[in-house]
Length: 254
Image (spheres, rainbow, N blue to C red):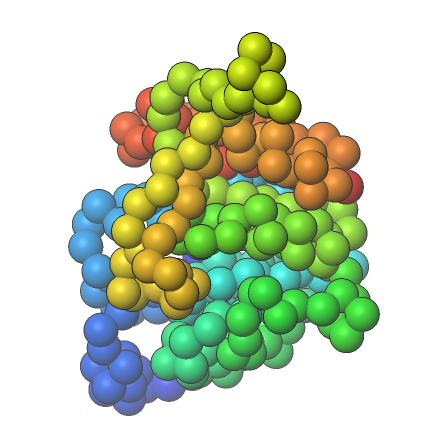
């Protein structure tokens, strides 16, 4: 959805220019829009919305005004602002980088969306005793950038009242075998890939990220305490990564 604003076209363009570069494409009336990082990433962002929001609409469409949302690692707030426009009671976007929070906050203020609030913070410091729990917790593009994805999923579970929505890349490959207690007995389970972390992301203190396979991610979600885990089948026409399940979308229910 486009963000409405009462800024003049001149002032809006000037402000958007001052905040460049943008990662997401934000659209405003009159054909004014930010330039995202590239067309491929813009397609991924649009595909996420096409697949995820219809499911959220079925779950919450008759009571959006009662729904509290948490957007973990919200970046510039693209998904948070979409939810705000759906009319949720509130959405809290959290990101570790202050420049992202500044952009998201400005967008919410410019678009007159008081139900969207943004704060700087570390996902591993999230505390349900302080913030409460949320009907919807979003973990979009997060878990595969982490050294400790299991710890992040446990935190997401603690913050979730109804459903946690996850999207991201997963590893591909068969199960792995490990010895167990003696040299005769062995156990087989789903695997993960260890890769070097990227500088743009902040949670690689040892310089690595651990990316689980889809079966491993599903098993981790159950271990974190979620009751049901549903894989979202991608609608036709989505990016090839979704069709081959190199990227997946999951709804994890409490």
